[in-house]
Length: 421
Image (cartoon, rainbow, N blue to C red; front, side):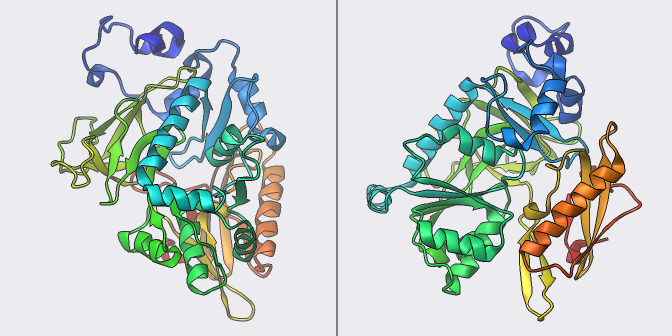
């Protein structure tokens, strides 16, 4: 708090009137994505940074994974709250993230697991959204070195399933990481004998599955399956244990489960949202930030023996969109493969499957763009993706209405037919 008030004009104004010494973070005002993005230039602590420069950086796909001003990684989030986010990660943030990741993986793997990992070459494959400045592509670029290039492989989550299967069969990873929905699809390919890999550890990310879903992945690959609780705003919030709980990394993050009025929610009761304070990001302080996820804190010690606070999370659900082919077969496409917020000029979007072979796109272009040009780019992106999946017969139309929020005020970016309303 002291650093933020001294170096961020936004926080200096927000915290005016508060005492110099703060005993508890609960006295600090709540921040949210909309407010922080609206005051971007005053929020950041580096006076060389401007929103205009960052926006231009994000709009250039050739800069994915590179560093702004040679110092900061850049990652974007979707506009599920109505406002897309742009987040900067400095060296200190990455140091904490990498240390957390190393401790996490070594804690999960036994001595025999580590031996198997080494015997299989220590190869890791990550299935990422690679068409924009998403945190997966940004993270991969941050950790990839010349030494590790042969051991790390990034695969596009937007690729047809058959292509992912072929790449993984060739690469034979010992560690498999990726969106939970894609991991579930790959488990089906493994069960069907088309995918034939033997990972030691599978790490589904970003989306939530049922316990049966995680168990199915574990059975298909005969591997350990573990999860993390992370967000672009804070990559090291909590690590999953074998009992299905996530243990908060309380050295570097503060998580506060609260009700709709931001009052504390006691352990054992599900929160309306959670406030996160990232204690490692100094270029873009994130303090009591409304993340929007609902969590439940365990009221008693976790049976795994980890003394850190244990939580369960209700965040983004892992869903897929299913299309029939012209031959009557079915093609499953992860929701994230259809997301188009990386297309320049897209401020907010919502893709609704209104029929088995029909998609309706609700689009809100950025204020300073040509709506027709943005739509042509979006249409081209979606039809290209559908063609790659053998779905050229699926039609895509522009809706007259804008994206529609849920009763909770969030915007579902992709709505499969079964959930359409």
